[in-house]
Figure 1 (cartoon, rainbow, N blue to C red):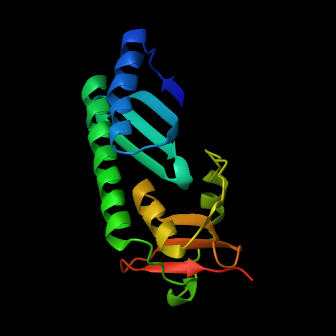
Figure 2 (cartoon, rainbow, N blue to C red):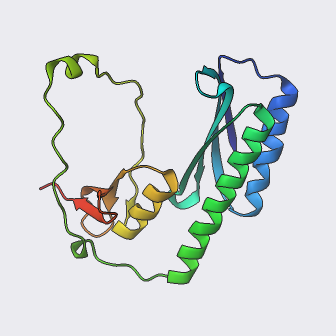
Figure 3 (cartoon, helix red, strand yellow):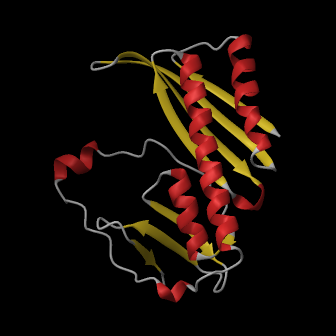
Length: 186
């Protein structure tokens, strides 16, 4: 198990790091095989809410399970506890869906792919946009319903995965009407 605790605009003391590891380490009771813990703590001063601690945690577990949660509070310890509770709910939801459904899987052809809406081509907006974060991802084979679960657990609006049947890279995304779409490149 590998812990990666980062901090921005704050210096974390050993006692705070120990609290984070102890509190979040309790999640291993609910989900076996957590291999990698990525914890990022930020301190920000926001206009509306004043000084805020934000804690973001990403867990990588066996079988490609990825869980992510982010919580903010005026103090660090309640933010860590809120992230713990959030991840615990996600684990419970994942297990309920997984065990309720069993091994039943739908084929990828059941979902309807639709194009994403085009972005505005305003020159001023294009100059302001920039890549602020890059992520390295491992694409493991999975079915489309597993990809939807991962997307929901991460709280993202899309998820890139390798289809278990065709071995092709596909993208599942949440549509504005609440349903899901699947992009299947040729």
